Amino acid sequence: MNLIAWGYFPARLAWRQLIFDRTKLIAAICGVLFACILVFMQLGFKDSLYASAASAPLKLNGDLFLMHKQSEAMWRPVNFKRSELMRTLGHPAVAEVSPLYLGLAPFKNIETQVKRTLMVYGFDPEAQLFNVEAIKNKRGELRLKDTVLFDESSRPEFGHIRPLLEAGKNVTEINDYKVAIRGLFQLGVSFAADGNVVTSDLNFMRIFPNRNAGDIDMGVIRLHPGTPIKQVQAELSSQLNEFVNIFTYDELLEYEKLYWANTAPIGFIFGFGTVMGLVVGLVIVYQILFTDIVNHRYEFATLKAMGYQHGYFIRLVFATAFFLAVLGFIPGCILSIGLYHLAESQMFMPMPMTFSKVITIFFFILSMCTIAGFLAIHKLKAANPADMF
Amino acid sequence: MSMLIDVRNLDFSFGSGELTLPVLKNVTISIHQGEIVLMTGPSGSGKTTFLTIVGGLRQAFNGSVKVLDQQLINSTEQVKVKVRQQIGFIFQQHNLLKSLTALQNVSMTLEMYNGSSERERLNQAAAMLEAVGLGDRLNYKPDQLSGGQRQRVSIARALVGQPKIVLADEPTASLDKQSGQEAVRILKQLAKESGTAILLVTHDYRILEIADRVVELEDGVIKD
Image 1 (cartoon, chains in turn purple, orange):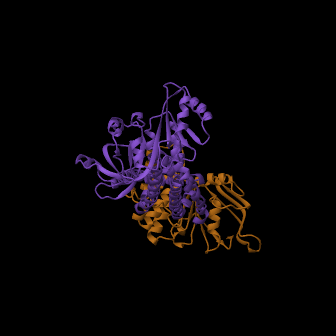
Image 2 (cartoon, each protein chain N blue to C red):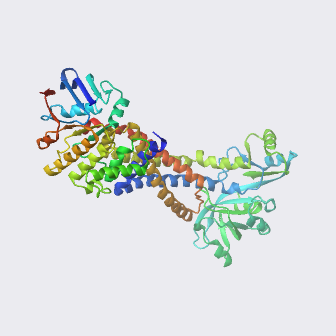
Image 3 (cartoon, chains in turn yellow, brown):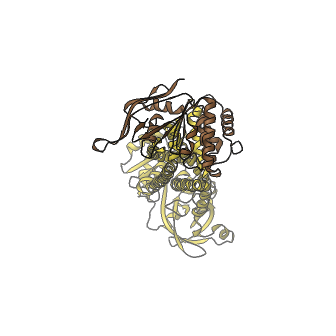
């Protein structure tokens, strides 16, 4: 039998049987669609988590980064001595180093006076630690006493800072210390911080009176252009105290991401949600295929009596599974795009719908339907042509 | 005339051990090309079991059952499938696929064979439906047809592959007298035109006249 007859005929019969009962078809599609949206949302939140976790380190402008080994992530750092960072200057490849101070502090909403915690970044304005034009351009303002720049991507609970600034109302409190907002930039919120401000290292010490400039949270190292970063990293790590980690840019991003994936169990939760979505979908599709076989067993037995072989019906079941996967996935994908936009506008977190995600989830759904097919085909034995008479 | 079905000393029983229930005892019968044989007998006499064994739907172990020169006793599934493909089946219920139109149902028989195009298959199926008097019902689904029309579609489905043998089990059981006689009349006419042998199991005595030969089965034994 040629290939067309092998695959096309059972697929065509599967299709004709599917579209014959529209109500059942719609119910079946809804089952797949449900699983599809569940998986899309879980993976979307997970990617959003990782993307937002990396939003601050992504903009850091450096080649190598020092962090205390006990720092699980940038948002919960452990201090180490500034002298540790300065020692790296002894390496000939190191061009400049600068400390970064990090702290979470309550920020008072200018309109409502409600306090909410955000992330404060403190550094020498001349060091230009962030690759953000708005911050670079405002380095003069940052040098002024008691000034900060505010992240416009922060959650709206912090107040509508732009119109307030335009109206000249720029004074608020961070950590109960009065500061003036001198400008805006865009960085992005994460699961750890609902908002961000940057300020100078000196202002940082004023906002956090318990901190001192000798204890830093992160050290940013820039090398002379053209030096092999990996090699310098290895040489420096042999010279540094063992309680500091030295990361390349990519390693830092990965480290931040892994914190959310593993240390904070959030990555696991979304992974688990994805699996549960697929399991629910699997059970639904299995039920659909199973009852489909039961309902058609006399027709299948008739065809078997006419000389159709067992393999034909296996292909028919898998074709049905395939059609359900495709028919459920298309509306599921379109709905998910809408939900992603909704989530982005509600959570102020990036939720990109990437092509690779669409492809990945399609294969998830396809595998889900295929496995359901494998589970359902044993029921084909119920179609025994000898019982037809 | 060549012999299409040649059954010798066939024994068959259901169950095993003490619960063995003999159904067919030493059945010997042969059917030639173009012959129409009616098998009658009371319920439980083993008619239907005999039909399923000859049709390659049920495995028998004792005796000899040669259908189209294939031995079906202790045969493999492959042999049985091959035999089935050369037989037209007509069932008590019409057993049409309810999601398919009459035309598509009849085409299902042709889709098993190689070589023909979709157009050829549909033309052949349409011609067959024309022959059973349903030329104006090609695109009707089983739900939209009457009982007699459905059984005629199933006759068309059985005959469109030009089988050498047609096996029919109570084809008129669910039909009223007129449509039942109409159905078997069409069946006989088409079979005679193409030289097809028919083995028809029934206890509908209204259709005995179409037979070349009537065989009576009682308690698994053929009565003379």
